[in-house]
Amino acid sequence: MVSKNRGLGQSIIWKLVAVAPVFLLIGAGAAWSAPITFNTALPVAEDEFIFREQFVVDQSGDDPSGADRDRKAFAAVSVLGYGVTNNLAVFGVLPYVDKKLEVNSMAGRSVRDASGLGDLTLFGRYTIFQDDVPGRTFRIAPFAGVELPTGDDDETDGLGRLPASVQAGSGSVDPFGGLVATYQTLDFEMDAQLSYKANTEANHFEFGDVARLDASLQYRLWPRSLESGVPGFLYGVVEGNLIHQDKNRSNGVSDPDSGGTTLFLMPGLQYVTRRWILEGGVQIPVAQDLNGTALEKEYIARFGFRFNF
Image (cartoon, one colour):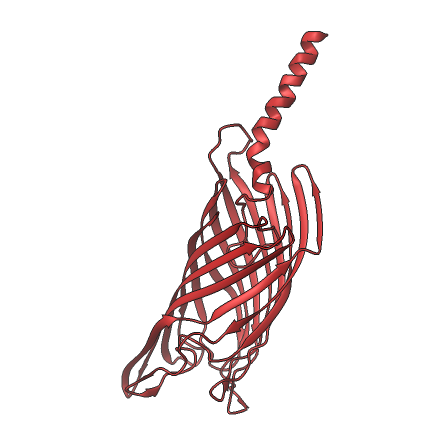
């Protein structure tokens, strides 16, 4: 009997040692699997920082009218988060953007482009509900913030002032808010977010407001069983993004060839360690209901890393 009890105790200790890395991922101050295209409700530890760098390639193609237009955008998006308390975290987001619009018509080919720092986004997220048990956590956190006009919005070329969609900045002050929920276990994590951004007018132009619903599932692919000494974890990621944008307005008049609704599906991968994450995925538009001749999305590729310190 003594031998059996000792064996049982050793078995329990071994299991605790095996899952310790994952408990550390759930604990404060650790990195964890998280959505690639939106935020999470998991906390930033008090007095700690999290830095994220993401590289985004956004490709839009010909519009439904058959016109030969092509828009490409590249962004290097830097995010810095700080844990004010265990429940409150604040974030700053600053992108460097490079945008190009190419139009081929009977009059010839024109290329209009701009690059530089984009608009600065500041927001806060506060946990209003959490339910933690060993190996599982569920959290709900509202967030609110504002996008500030730090990017240039008055660039010109030989054809005159660049279109608003090509400018590095919007020139407007745009508030936004929403709610994000996260359910995390030792094997997987699920996140969902509902948000709304109210774009305001600048330079007699106003982008349409944006409402979106996002969902993400991250499932541990490796190691299949938890063991001690594992340096990191590989997660498969599947995300969906339902995004609706109202029509743009110029001089108070709605643009019939702007706005609409797009549903993206994104497969991706994440490699998660105690302090850092490598991640990547490609958003593919599976359904688009756009207004008029608004440009259709072809894909959005996202690759990057994040770490806690």
